[in-house]
Length: 391
Image (cartoon, rainbow, N blue to C red):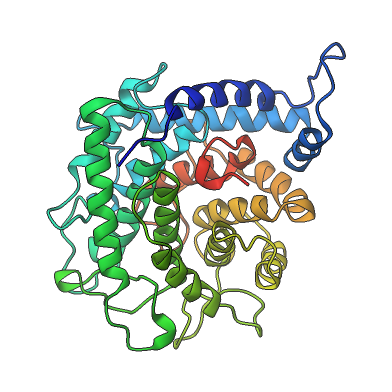
């Protein structure tokens, strides 16, 4: 396994140039040379906010990040229920990465590095990244429910930072990623009761058995982990990704015009987070503008985010996935979606920099650090600093 050549240096340069260019999009001096037409066109796709809106968003993001750091515990984790770890700590690190902060560097470097060390210590002998042991039967607020989420989110974070560390620390990250990939593949190939469920993931049960076949929500995170690992030159055969992509494709419901939670059986519940996750998954597979993605994006535009902490499914979770999805779709989708979301999130941020816990049974047990990390990640797609979400 080899690290990405020059990634550490190029990441610093990319972060510096990007933050300078994006932090004040309208402040381009007349004396500066004109941008190449392709660069100017790409910037126009991103910049759908006014200068005042952009400034408000920057401030909200920085206040949110400060809140998260104030909730870091001595062991490096970000305060949350044990069943939400290391996922919530990893979401926090991803939120900082999305603003250009790197573990081990800059004013927040030591704290982020301690957070990464906590995540590494959460890996179990079989490769699962979970601070808590999954219960023998499904517990909604337990590790049997959150375990595969924790695992995929933590794996995604580690593959996104891989190459920013050096020596033994970087090798430890690499070893953890390899073991996590092996665990993820083992879960993916568990027997399924329906052929349409093959290639996906769901919850953990006794001895880490899959207790409910597959769902698009868990699968989207696992697929992002796979794609990020491949981008970092880890051994993830194309077959693994192709099988997950096939599961996502099977999930589209033409009658509802979107991707329900379940591909086969059940009520086929629709939520914004699931729809957004499916669109991001298709984009990662190179299917940015497929008919299914466009119809699901049209469906999302009808599900307003202006009613803060309301609507179909968990609000902040849906905001993260739909923001990333609409950025991938670009054009009118991004222009119509992002400014109202920014206005709503900025208006509803608490004085301490946090956002309210999810007003929904799925996610309401994880508190404000969880929703704050999600909200920051929902606001930062336009920065284009996280490789996995770049368009």
